[in-house]
Amino acid sequence: MTRRVRRELPDDVYQALVDEGLLEMYEEQPAYQQNDYVGWISRAKTAETRQKRFDQMLDELRKGGVYMKMDHRPSARK
Image 1 (cartoon, helix red, strand yellow):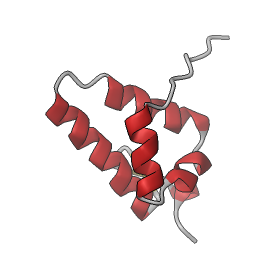
Image 2 (tube, one colour):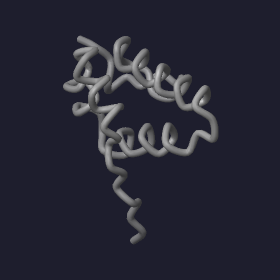
Image 3 (cartoon, helix red, strand yellow):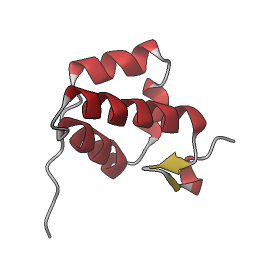
Image 4 (tube, helix red, strand yellow):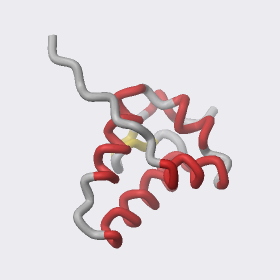
């Protein structure tokens, strides 16, 4: 069985989640989603792309029910 590398949450991402009141929403996401978001944001080649991806993650957490621009019913807000 192959396991993914567990990515560390960057300090600035953590702080923004706290500041936006979204840390709990982030932590409620499955581990693979948390890991995917961090990896996706971290792999951005430019600061502009990183910010765009970061903003998308925050927007999706605010809305709930969305993951990487796809419907994700388990994370929908009740």
